[in-house]
Image 1 (cartoon, helix red, strand yellow):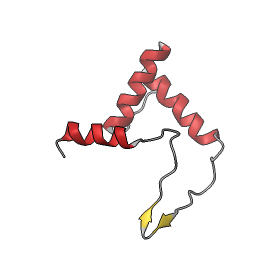
Image 2 (cartoon, rainbow, N blue to C red):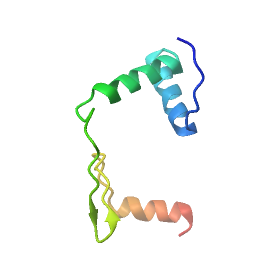
Image 3 (cartoon, rainbow, N blue to C red):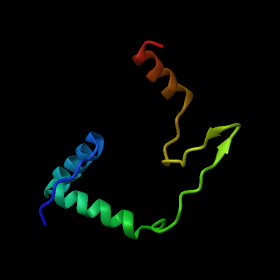
Length: 79
């Protein structure tokens, strides 16, 4: 089906990258990602907001950020 959507630039870029890896189109990639979101383990559940000291705690992405990683990024940013 053909339609027009307003999609954030980062989402479109991710869809294009997925399409390039999978050998498909950005539209197909967006359909796959939407289905995953609708049928995944958290589908239908409300996101639980957790905070500590008034600061939101974000879910882990499985990547450990080391002090060395933080220093390298700070050096790259000139901080």
